[in-house]
Length: 315
Image (cartoon, rainbow, N blue to C red; front, side):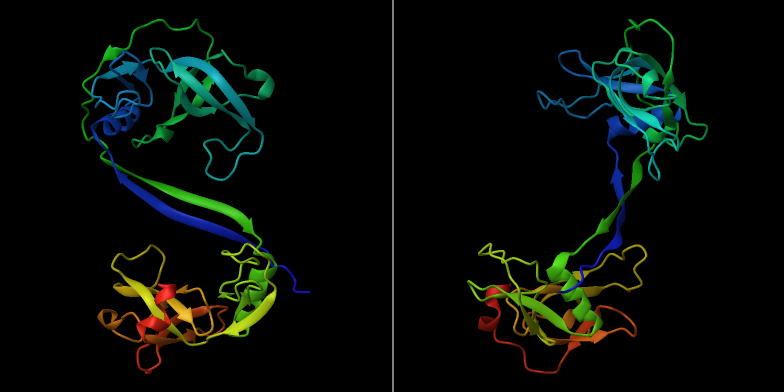
């Protein structure tokens, strides 16, 4: 029986976005130790602010300043902080309704333990020493003995010197991936520079990479079938934006490739040919890097292009 593989896997990318006037004012305000909200048509103050009323969809621009103190509306204790979380010691995730706000802000509370946290407790903002115009300019909330605030929010222009106009948020997911029996066999075959799929016992289609079940019939698959190594480009795209940490010069081509004998196209990079000469029906073969456990790219075989009717069902 094939041993099932398991390995740590990291999915990471920087998410870059521009800011409209409301979000720009909110984040720039945090840099200046000012918390801004926005007033809706019915008078509710939303913190964090949004640019459109969630009820009426009307555009919102009536900015107001609220207090840096507030009340915990609900919470959950986090005994084991993870990498890049706001605090490296156990803390509480909290929803805090700041004084003057009608909605709650999600952040963290620095507390000695879960017994020190309760719904209804009063808290205040602890500002970060170095502020750049991000939600992390609020380092955390901390307990604060005071009466619930009754002060009305005050109007604010939202104007600051050097406003923040864009943010980059690093998104990262760390987990342990267990590919299962079918994919483990597929990966092990790649070590031997072979590509294997599995045939459905009902429709007889061969799926690569295999998933252990037929996506059409929903029945288990177990019969291994070696496919390729050559195949046909069924469709493709030209990549013109260079990815971070990827040592491939743009433009380059990424394609769907139907390996000979397979009934499902897989992904692969096309090289060994000018990017503007890649085409549907191009016959290609794999190129393996020395010591690698996967195909580096595919290159033209020199064969005549495949007839469209031979791969039209795989486009």
